[in-house]
Length: 403
Ligand SMILES: Cc1ncc(COP(=O)(O)O)c(C=O)c1O
Image 1 (cartoon, rainbow, N blue to C red):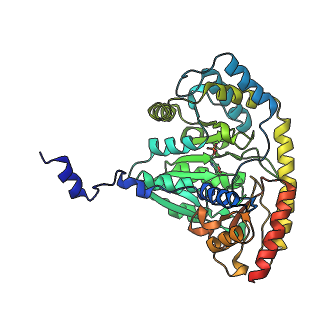
Image 2 (cartoon, rainbow, N blue to C red; image 1 turned 180 degrees about the horizontal axis):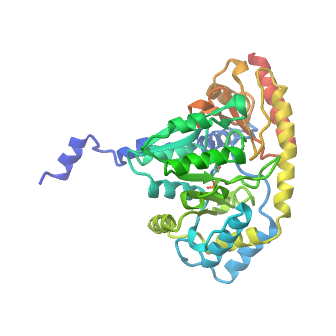
């Protein structure tokens, strides 16, 4: 047997203690920009934060109280990896009610945030060599995870001239015998676009015909500015081939609590729960109890937050359209605007960096969401109207200087 040192030297990894696969793992630029903005703040600069996707509201009081009661009652131990039985039941009931379908608790897995559902279901379902279709621009973790497991990431370009709708003919043509999974996200981060029931019917037909598993990211399901939420799981024959991803982060202003849940075919739920056992063990019990209070308790604060987001959306879109070289379509869901900055003649990354450095406004370049995000920037309007107006005024001044 060869000595280990020789083997290491032969593989070119000597002194490097991370695996090759790490080179395929991407990141989420929002956290990097946030860190850069915080650094500027530490040096005395004042920054308006429109980069991070989290509600600026406090978690509703009755949810916090449920967590406190749970901690007082001693919920400080390990609990089952798939989730507390009562939490799985509450989330199964919530998802069933909201989507007009019927989920059993055994189909639900509870995780620390919605992201692990994404991570675990891709790990559990996708093999190296498989192809996965995903929206581009889109939440960067999709592409990152597809690449990480050695699958081929096949972008579905969202068309800015059609309110960032999916091109269904393109989707049909993009499916090959190797396509394993299709990722959907509605309402959509970063464009605010939504999938209509008509589009979903066609997508469901394509999924059924080609035996695809659909990963439907619906973390913004309660954030529609016009119209109702439509989910692919409500389409015929889709319950048994969809991972429905949802969570408390956005709906109940609970980003820091880390609470997500997924509903999927039971055989897949078992695998996803096994990945939880192998990694996080479980989601904190008091957080799950808070989540039960969230989905079973009063929903008026959700409505109040949505009304505030809608008012901000109108202000942000009007303000962006008044900027030189910028046009912005009206987003229909979530809390992001995705203005077209091609009229400025600047590349999206350079412009977003300039707006931070010179204007003190933190936002994200469109390419943080994939190559088809070039020519756009993402503005999160999960901030007060006052801060939004301040940011718009600074952007106007910064753009005036360079155009
Ligand atoms: C589209 C999308 N999916 C999933 C997530 C992850 O949510 P969580 O914070 O609950 O992990 C986010 C968060 O920004 C998101 O925008």
